[in-house]
Image 1: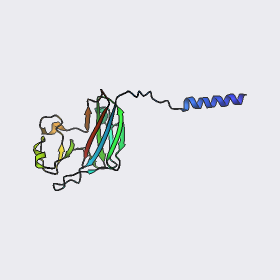
Image 2 (image 1 turned 135 degrees about the horizontal axis):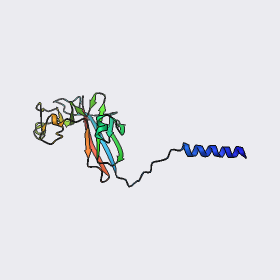
Image 3 (image 1 turned 90 degrees about the vertical axis):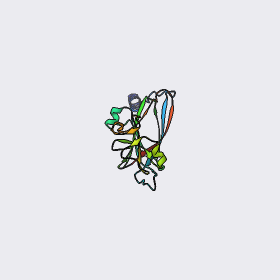
Image 4 (image 1 turned 180 degrees about the vertical axis):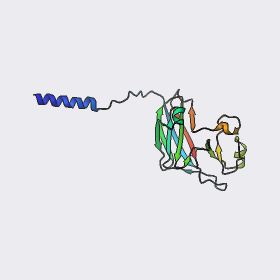
Length: 178
């Protein structure tokens, strides 16, 4: 009788302390679904102003600017063979994101890469960059919206904000380069 009681006590102990409690997840909680394609623009030229998909790129998602500044991501992952990465995370006001593949990253000299100039018309329709942009050059984001890409536009990662209120799907192309 004692051995049965001890055995039951042992298994009860294992069950109670050995099982990981699941978080109480409310399925009605708004989510942010990131559907990203990472493009490596390192090999672009004026005669071939195109990027290549970036398989196996590392994606880092941060929940605060402080975490982004200190490189402490909340979520991480890798792109698949098509350069794509998907993740669903709890909705919050702002997320910070960066992508890296080897030496290629989403910023260059502190400027957020937003694509590649493919035509003179494209150059003429975007904020002025210094030095003057040419076909095949990287497009940098005018973060402060003043029409000029300058030192006031430097940033260490991409920012997505205004996301808290409802379930949202963010489909985005992320450009990286050396």
